[in-house]
Image (cartoon, rainbow, N blue to C red):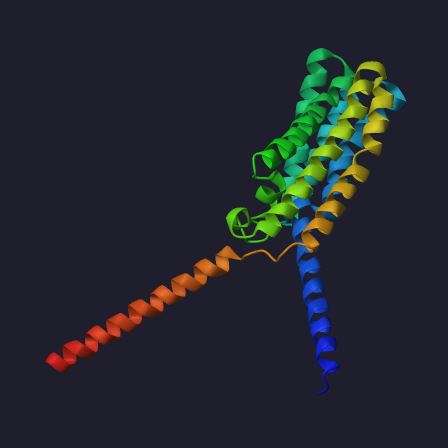
Amino acid sequence: MTSLDKPTEDTTADDTTAADARAVTEAALFEAFGGVRGMVETVVPGLLFVTIFTINKDLHMSAIAALAVSLILVVVRLAMKDTVKHAFSGVFGVAFGVVFAMMTGNAKDFYLPGMLYTLGLALAYIVTTLCGVPLIGLILGPVFKENLSWRTRNPGRKKAYAKASWAWGLILLAKCAILFPLYWWANTTQLGWVLIALKIPPFLLAVWLTWVFLAKAPAPIDVFAEMEAEEKAAAAAAEASSSEAGGRHRREG
C-alpha cells in the first residue's frame, strides 16, 4: 500500500459514515413528523372543509365532513396496526375547529384553533431555544435514542438542535404573519385556500433545514446502548463475584 492509498481509504470511510448519518437522520425525521402519509392526513380534512364550503357555503356539512374524514383516517391506521399519533392529532385539531365554528357560527373559526396552535408552537421553539433546551432536541432526542444527552455531553449536536429550532420558530412565525391578517380581512374561502397552500411548503422547508443541520452535527450518543452495556457489565461483575465466593467457600470447606 502506498502513501497515496490511505487517504483515499480514509475518505471513503468518512463518506460512508456521513451517508449512514444522513440515512439515520432521514429515518428519524420521517418517524417524528409522519412522512408523506402524515402530511396527507394533515391536509385532507381542511381541504375537504374548504372545498365543500366553497361550493355550498354550508358550515355544518363542511364541518361534519372534515371531522368524519379525520376519524376515517384514524380507523384506517388502526386497521393497519400502524401508529396513530399523527392521525389522532389531526382529529383533535379538526374537532376543536368544529367546536369553535359551531359555537360562533363563523366558518372562519374552524381554522382559528390551528392558527393559535401554530403561533404557540412557534413561540415554544424560540423560547425553549433561548432557555438552552431547544424544542426540536426534546422531540428528536428519544427518536435518536439519545434522550437529553446532547445538552451536556454533545455540544455540537445541541448547537444543531438550536439552529433547527430557530428555523422552525421563524418559519412558523412567518406563516402566522400571513394567516392572522387574512383571518380578519379575508372571507372564509380565501383564508381556507391560503391556509391549505401554506400547509406543506413551510413544513418541508423546516424539515429540510433540520436535516441539513443534523446531518452535519456529531453523531448522537445512544444512551440506551450505554445503559444496556452497564447492565451487562454489572451482571458479569456480580456473576464473577458469586463464582469467586463459591470457589472460596469450597476451598475453606
